[in-house]
Image 1 (tube, rainbow, N blue to C red):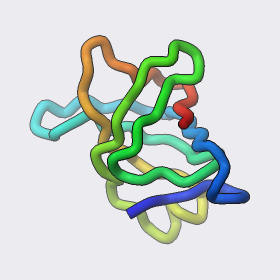
Image 2 (cartoon, rainbow, N blue to C red; image 1 turned 30 degrees about the vertical axis):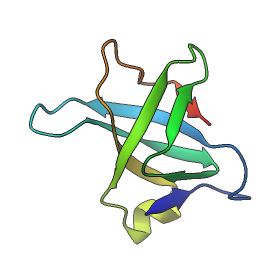
Image 3 (cartoon, helix red, strand yellow; image 1 turned 90 degrees about the vertical axis):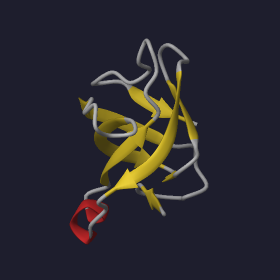
Length: 93
């Protein structure tokens, strides 16, 4: 499953992190945000545009027609220490 932002799906991914949740019962961090460009798929490695730290997308959570229309999605990303996902940052490919 994948989701995409506005414009050409072949463009590099740009994902704005809006919220991060660390629920111990989940297999990874829940990262909610907006797809600004490109297409995100499970298994993809994204990189923090500022620090270069990487995050692997394990799954996409609950995409709905409304969230797709708004280009919003919740990703499940691999839990790392220190975390590579920070609210307000952009993840890219």
